[in-house]
Length: 182
Image 1 (spheres, rainbow, N blue to C red):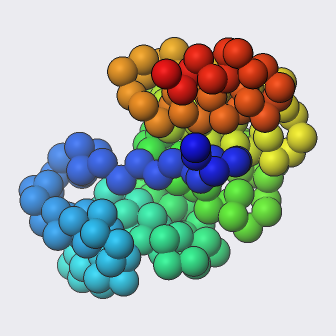
Image 2 (spheres, rainbow, N blue to C red):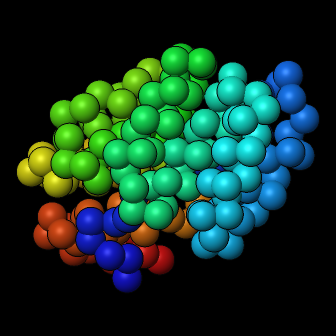
């Protein structure tokens, strides 16, 4: 069974790199992050940014790495820099929402997640995170609706269905909740 509320979902996909720079130069940082080594990921991003401070993709990954190290305030700064460079970057808004949530800035976190969804309707990770945030704000019906939307947006992915099952069970929808686990 997944934890309740489910943990926020981060998007650090390498497909969102700056088209002016080769994507493989961020690959080591992405690998280190995925291996649970955010300190090395941050160091690599800093080296890239020292040479090319306009790299929105490197700023975004820097923010994700800082958040993974328990430094959400530093993550917010990096993600705000990302959005200053590339304002139409839904992954950065999603990650900013997570960092703001960790700082207990719930209204601002919700605004960031809604911005991600405006830029990419049906964005599964943002919907999942919005469900978690709304549950934390005591908006259980809204949280459940976001979880339903996330599961519908990604019918072949397991995590959105598990999150939905968790929300359903927490809401007392036993039959539907257990069915979602299957």
